[in-house]
Image (cartoon, rainbow, N blue to C red; front, top):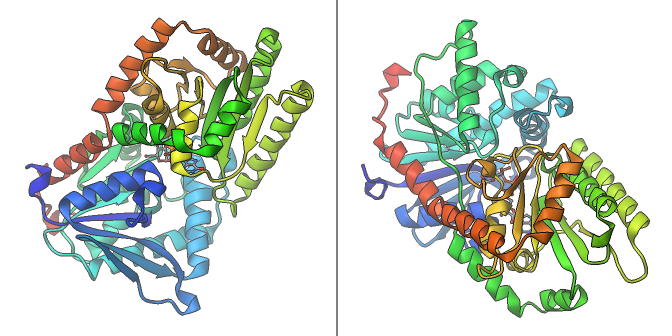
Length: 462
Ligand code: GDG
């Protein structure tokens, strides 16, 4: 079945995006907004209002043929579910960081309650021919809750973050529930083949131990997320009118700029990256004063302890490198802990000769794709990319590095800075063709076609 012949599309995610101004938000919001605009439908998520402050009713907005439903939650439940189970248990665990897991019993209870609340709010509005697309690790238990309420709609799930190997996954306090929960979806989608393999191995490992109670197994497949390449390139060109970018260009005139753009998250490998930059200055002193490294680290999840720790660590690292190498006329690292408007980000990526994307583990990493999209094809910069970013599966023409090996990253930055134009063009051309082929539209069409192709499940079989 063609995705365009479907009924209403219902998207469910932790937060709803701003459909009035999608391009101000991340690429994901734009991708989902476009899918909703194509099909007409509804986007349901937490609306930001707390029910114990008297805001019990969902906030409903309508933009064109699309309705957003922002539900209210009790403040303590939201915190235990979002800061707690989602971001202090699932996020570190799914990024292979058992050392950072901080589990408390009330977190899991709140996670279950919030998934049930989402299901109840959706249930009241769901039509029988709607197809439902659920996003990410916050809502792993949504499908079983909807099935319990009697809905046999097609329900798909997409995991934006990695799925860890079984030995790590089995450390999740509710790993049986997660596998059972995923089995209640019709399709479970992952970013990479590695994630899909890990999921299938976890199911097999649990079956061997006789653990899962699930009967059915959902269709599982890889759907690498992409960006709208043309729109991002357009934004990068438009940023030429940005006075701040213009003034920055004049200040760094003659210097080659290395750029990193990340949420300030420990999965992004930022301290390792700064160390690699420092090592570059030691190994290649001739690069001093001819390069500058701009790191934008946007604030995120500041109520979670591990995020306060990474912030302190990074500020110390940037201070150390600048203290050691800066002089009156040259600052090696410019570190910005602030949110930057999206058009300006595009312009900064375009104005940089090296893009550094070196997460320790990442579902995909859209910045890698945005960097390629923003380049001038006749004089493109070079992408240095971690082998542990999902994007590395598709982007082998980047300089692929192991982010844990400081000298390897330092060497790759040096290679990128010295790369002849012919090689830069040919690597960039290959990368650009690939991200154009696997763009945001291909991602959502492939997912929705696969979801519409599965047979409707009879509730008796679940
Ligand atoms: C998760 C997965 C997966 C960054 N700083 C600012 C800002 N950004 C934008 C970037 C990019 C987006 O946010 C970040 O996307 P990433 O993919 O790099 O990483 P996560 O946020 O961790 O996203 C990831 C993704 O979901 C999609 O499936 O790729 O692996 O972890 O678009 O440009 N945007 C603005 N200001 C900032 O300061 N406006």
